[in-house]
Image (tube, rainbow, N blue to C red; front, side, top):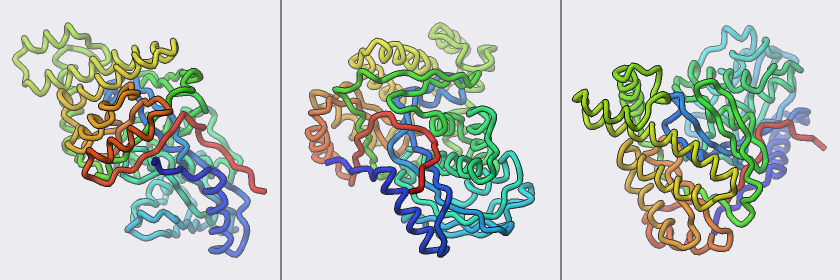
Length: 393
């Protein structure tokens, strides 16, 4: 069966107990922020398109307390770390903070450096149920949890949730050296139980899309447990190809392009790769818009069909799938009751997401296990809450 995701209260208790053990005092602040799964709208973000993620029940929790110094000591209980589980550094002045080892701490440092004010010294413990390297945005969960912790620690809050998300994105760009889009931070900040979030990556406007009629269905997230193999060079190659196509079409971005523009590109004697990359982006933006309309009408069969089309486009036109991901998708689609299945995230590893009738979950998992030679991990999810402060009893 699917892996049971630890309840937020269980993660919170683990963090609070660990803090007391490590620092011989009780924490007085505890916050969390979720990972996410993108339901549709892949590789559209840097083309100013639409994305449709939802927050997951898997969270990163931070428990902590001021320590009356100007130093931060942070301990991570994440078992996947291979570069040291603690870090200590001066928290102010914040413009003196520099990235370094261990690498996971750079996400925290970057948030402090991009915070609204200098931060007093604190001790903290981090515990997470968001799997690392699965494409479920463990990095954004850590960033947004850190920023939420800092807001509570200082009493200074971002004026708008968008400002908070953008500060966390800058942390990832400047300190982790990862040129990520904005989707992950936005959904981790703004996630709402029972809703997906439509994000317009051109003007950063958002709309909460209700999934109130989803009661008979769940999203099955299947982790291939193969790490992302999409290197930065392959990612940049696809991104730059899209930028070049927009330039040839005299568009600000491929958001402005249409199916007719793909035909115009073909007349320009451009590479077949450029045609394919453009076709994926143009049709994926259109699919995401159609997917929102389908969800608003409660038409989950149409939504599932669009998920299938999305995966096929990512596989054939954008070429970011893998044997493992294709096997997981194919095995899921074989089972009656699966409305749609697709890779989620950048591709070449990580996870798939499938829309499944609730009473067919066991059959789907059994079929995937029979067809997939790897060691897949399964999570059943519906849209969860975004970042929040947790009560300490």
